[in-house]
Image (cartoon, rainbow, N blue to C red; front, side, top):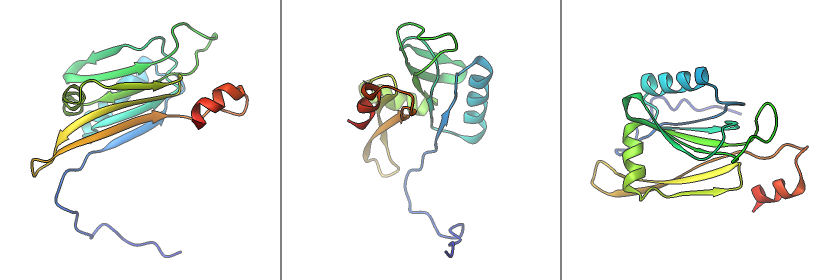
Length: 150
């Protein structure tokens, strides 16, 4: 298979955002610091995180206007933690989330979607549905697998 070199292809005029995703396998304070530092240095608009192992569904504010929207179980399900997703937003993404009506939809403990409204360089309003999700592993129950399939 021949691979094209797209580095010289001119970009369309418009708006470009950078979104990262990562299975965090337990979002600890050090992991969170790395996420925030990378978002700042790499100009990341949003970072979707899976398997955060966090309890509850808070929205937390961090230094520099960054916010993280969490969704997890209401209580710890096992010793090490399990499940949960999150979306970390830079200040522009956070404002878009507010402008979008703070819409958050959760499907079980593995999928969360939010709406972000932005304005492109031509003044057009753009609505983005940003989803963070991960599939259950083979040891999960059929019920857990069916939630993801729906």
